[in-house]
Length: 418
Image (cartoon, rainbow, N blue to C red; front, side, top):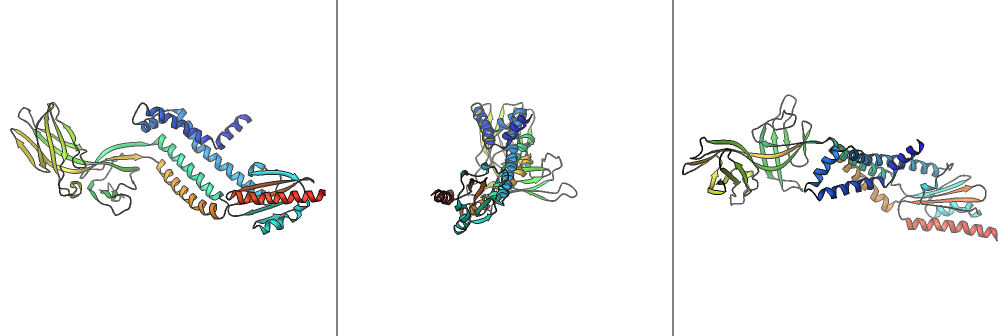
């Protein structure tokens, strides 16, 4: 049992656990990519259905949590040593540990380290020296950020639900909750921000008492009734009326057409007939955007089987008639194909981004200008000294000081022998 617990402890605190797990998922992704174009989506679905892969994915946040605990314990132990409590000191807490014979130079060592800019503390059996600030807070912020990132990925893969539907002006927002407010207006206009050139805004009226008016944009995603709203594709909700001499009755349909930008075609099948329409949004030719201005002209081609019967342009609200054929677009509205995603892992991923950014802002100046350097000299009985060294930056300079101190101790020991 103890061996099992020890093995679990090593697994959860090892630095190689996370890279190995990530490597396994990367290999699975590469294999899937040979068989499908949607490798990432396929891998997400495979992971969600596999208990083994879910357990393997859970190792990532557990490993980071174990490393957080291990590094906190190591930091506390080093602080204990630097404050003079050297009982049961672990040499693995330092970068370098050397045992040398004791020398009288140990008595004047503190003064030498003070001259070199180190702060010192000396007791009867040990001497500690240090300078600079520790990057431990930055390291903890980084690890907590990675922990939140892995937790967010785990929650997203295991619990994420997604629904895609058309958002149409004048129609209730198709939120998964089933109680979306009426979409009063959809606007596409020039953006005032630095990231996006255009800004899409869907104005949604309150859906009930206590509900506020909502504006859903592209970035950052809006949270509506427990779901994140992600607009994906622009298009037109078009009311189509069509009749032909050889059809027993007229055809009418509210069609959802992904025909933005201008020139992009979308098919519309006429059921129980050989006819098919190809519809696109005509380019105004004056540089304006029909989706922005709301003045839309639709280009169409009428096909019978594979032959083009005729083609033409019909303005929104207009009618086209020829040889007994009649095509009308009496109503058209802006439309956005939108994803409604319930994903609580996103909150952890955003938190991770904040923590990782804070970690870098703390780490950079400390690492460059105030790196932590530590030395510990402990008497081992009456004839030995254990010398320990550790540096978080400028290792070469600190190593030179440490070697200089060792040379002083060795010179003192040599003088004593002479």
